[in-house]
Length: 203
Image 1 (cartoon, rainbow, N blue to C red):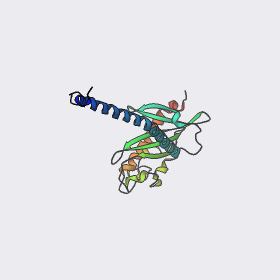
Image 2 (cartoon, one colour):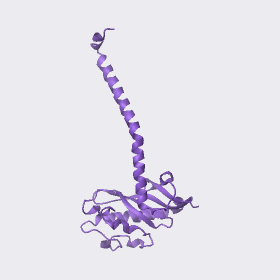
Image 3 (cartoon, rainbow, N blue to C red):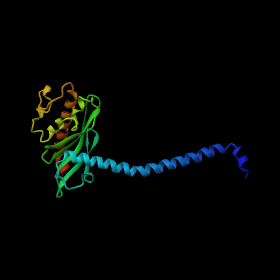
Image 4 (cartoon, helix red, strand yellow):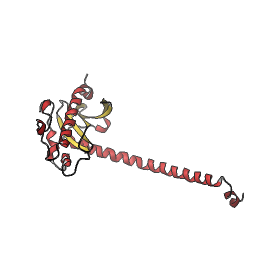
């Protein structure tokens, strides 16, 4: 076949474009597969680091990422990471969220089997730098005050910032942000209390 005459045919350009598209899609698929495992591994490493920040050292001897269950809350699935010691569930870690000043504030909180908070850390927020970002452990020790708290200490009606008559400090010029965090943690405690037996695997 004369190649120069073939190029003049109407079907030449569509075939050429199709071949390039096939090659490009194949390359993209290969790159996605090649980088996908690395992305998943990096996300798992980040999550393990976050879990380690809310759980006391030596609290669990299992792989929390491999010991989970899902419980629905307000129509949304919540992944529960169970912390075990010698096979017995000693606590749980899960995410909670509340609307802050700019967007939802996402928290990771850990509780022991009695429903006492072991630790809370902010994993995502869009609050005002210099004001609302004091909820970050790297900016202020404020978030650490939740350790040791429960629905019994303080009492449920005291789960609010001091401006609202509660037991928790707020920030000067940024009451909305700490108010949202307090509400989120209280909601997480109530969620754990409601599903405690299921989370701990008790009959």
